[in-house]
Length: 145
Image (cartoon, helix red, strand yellow):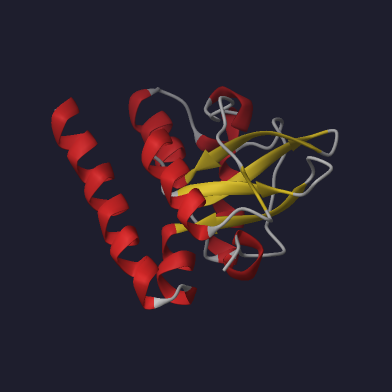
């Protein structure tokens, strides 16, 4: 099974100029925890609900006063629509992330794949790898504490 078979599409996006209140509203409306950030139609970053919460909890500013560019992750790990789910899980473990933007052969955003997408849609043999990825993410967090 490939990433294309399991990814979420279409994916909701924002721009670097989107304020955090609007980004959070998009996440709420579309029941998602991350938004790819597009700048002139190209993938420029990703912002998560955690990014927004941490930014608002550590800065003395309101959500409408901060832009996505202030909190987004720009050092992105992505995968391709043609990658295997095993490869996507390996990338997630390596990058210590739960979600990956998916790009097509032209490098344009095609969707997003999450651990949940893989767990729900993957064959039984891949589910053990999902558990291993979750454990690796958890272990990384415990080591950092």
